[in-house]
Image (cartoon, rainbow, N blue to C red; front, side):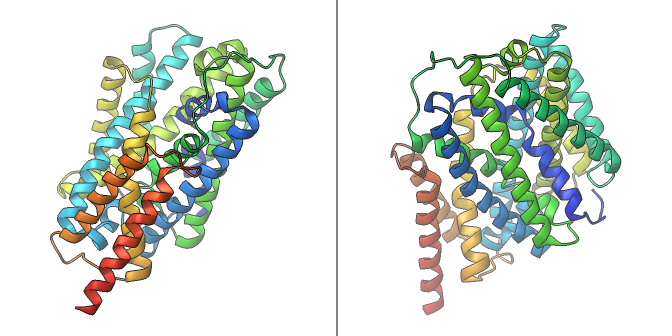
Length: 389
């Protein structure tokens, strides 16, 4: 990794690419049974919550000039930071595999050369992006994002203004609270990554704000495309949506480019997080290894349903960021010098358990809000006890 600083525009491009994602479109299809109006409201509410948390996480890294996992030292100490970095590497390997799997499966439905061949093609393109590097993509990123923007406009026109009629044969709807939580979960999955990019920003506040806003808007757009396509075509399979919508080569380009630009961030950040655990590792080489592992996983394993994976990410990182926000902005207690802050680890465990239990509660804003409120309050309470002592 290098020390070049990134502009606000560069950060905007990065998070536009993160938002234009086949995984987001696929997740959007799950909202179809709610109906367009109710589903859209759940998507917007969930992203408002998730992207607010994304902003705070990125701003902490931008101020401190530290990567996402390095910032966790403030609350959990050096060993605690390694623990979360390891969990983050695991989820990023998982995301890399899921993204390549979804992309290769979808493209193969349009041009049937073999899923494993498309997985290798997408994996190779991701490795190319990694080798070029985040601050050297320059004009390539501008061209890629411009093309994606135009293609997604075409996708919207075909889906929403085409000849497809509304299909009423939809499965039973999830609850509104569960839908909101599923919308929160996607930006929450980026929370352990955003500081990896804002730490290099010339203007941390503006870069973080623009990154969060751009990602939130584009991600909502992708969710709504998926939901609208599922309602209008009666399909939950993005490949079949592309085929029924007559996308052809346009669908191929959208799926491949969006998969590469999004999954590149996963693999790249896995390399950065791995360096937090093992300092001697080369981040770029590790990122390439993660891309290779993801490609192999995409070829060998079935990864059709990612809802449980998203909820796992929420249960790990929602209480983590609640503790970090409370410590950094309110308690102002820095545990970086410690090997491990045992009390904070205990509070995180309580938050993790609370999240899993709250998943059974049908709260209109989802379980992340409740879980973070509990974890945040426990952190403040602990901070007051320490000050009195």
